[in-house]
Amino acid sequence: MVTINNDDNYENENILVIDKIKLLFDRYNQKKIKQKYLKRKLTSYAKTSGFINNIYRKQAWNLLVHTSSDEYTTDINQIESHQYYEQIKLDVIRTLKRFPPNYSDSERSELQDELILIITKILIKHEELHYYQGYHDISLTFLLVLGEDLCLPVIDSITMSHLK
Image 1 (spheres, rainbow, N blue to C red):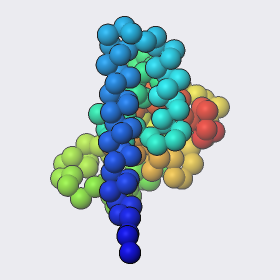
Image 2 (spheres, rainbow, N blue to C red):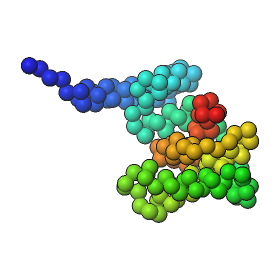
Image 3 (cartoon, rainbow, N blue to C red):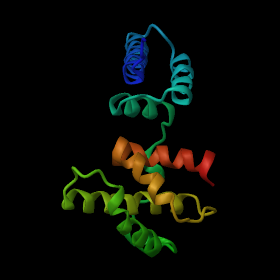
């Protein structure tokens, strides 16, 4: 009797996707393919297999959702006086269980502060939006994968296209 190890198949598929994504970026950087083609292929991978690892996730999302961080307020008074700021803060403080165990208390605290600012900045930019419970969990995932600078435009774009 022959058994198939699904973990091996999954791992081989991941390696194949990573190789294809790497090749796409290499060809793009060598100016052998156009940005429009690269975006179309990356969108296809995002829908079917994902980008597999954080290195390619950052590169792909940066290319697919490119906006300027100048579009967001940096005025701390405006942020802290926003109508949802206190609720966001309460919800984010409760996200302790959503952090990977390898984060120290100080790293968690710093990420929580960043998450509060990110969510509030998006809500200030889009006055028509309302905060809802669970939005911080979605946003935290992007923050952990993409980092503070890149996650803001990605969360903004996904919010406006899928989470309103």
